[in-house]
Image: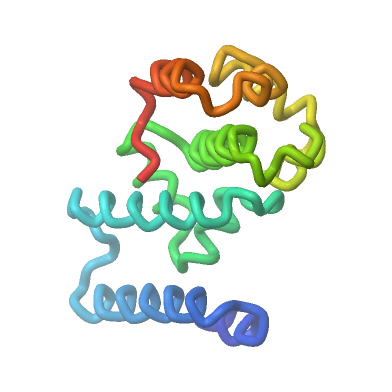
Length: 171
């Protein structure tokens, strides 16, 4: 991890550098104390919170995967998977959910009316408009065009909220 940080130091943001540095210090302290892994449930909840925040902030990144999230945050993929499994989801599911939330919000926002559904799909991290449409219909029960035409009316908002109830919290 230290070698990777050194090699990537010119390409990572200061926040990413700080996050990886913090994880390195945490791992070194654990090793010095004779611990080989954090097992406290609170630690998994902390990892989950940080992962959820990172994914929400970077949802539009089409290259984002569980591996890239773990690398950016300075944790192993296994640790990220374990924390999200503890919360009842996976990196892939969480990334998809955040991208769908992003598209839903953009479909309702007047500032994005000029964008086609295909443009919204790519701008929100989806590989194609058909991938977006399929996932969107499964998640919200309507296609993106129907959501856009419904606009931000109270009934559409209530319908979207009703469909999202029972899903794990994204924050």
